[in-house]
Length: 181
Image (cartoon, rainbow, N blue to C red; front, side):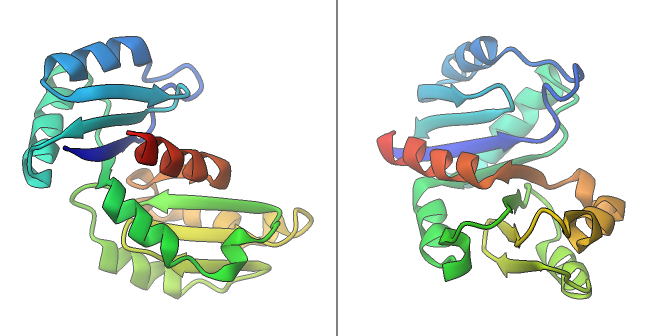
C-alpha cells in the first residue's frame, strides 16, 4: 500500500464551500481507501491505496462531482513523490524567511504554462523554486511583502484559481503525515 495526500482547493474558506472533515473521512473510507485521515479544516486528506494513481484521480474526480461539486481542483501525490520534491528544495527553504508558501499544482493543470508565466515575473525580495508538485515561494521580509510579485501579480493570473496553497508549516506537516501513513 502506498501513502497518498489530496489537497483540496477552496474549501472552508471564509464560510464558503463548507466540507466537514469527519464526513469526508467516512466517505473516502466508504470508497475503499484505507487509514483515511485529515489535517486541519482546509482540505488536507491522507489515505493508503494499492490503486494506480490515475485510477485514484479518476475516482476522486467522480466523487467530488457527485458530492462536493465546488471542489473543482485538487492536488494528488504519493509519499514518494513528495519526499523527492522536498529533498530537492534549495537551502533558502530551510531558512527563517518572513513567509514561505507552496503553490501545489492541481490535476490537469498546465504546469509548463504556469512556470513560464511565473518566470516572467519581476521578483522583489522573494525567491522561487519550481518543484514537480508545486512552486515553493519565499518572501524575505514582511516590510516588502505588499510589493512582491507574489502579492501584486499572482492573484491576477488565471491559473491562481487552480493552485492550492499551503504555508510552509503545513507543508512540513503534510510530509510528516505521509511518512506516518
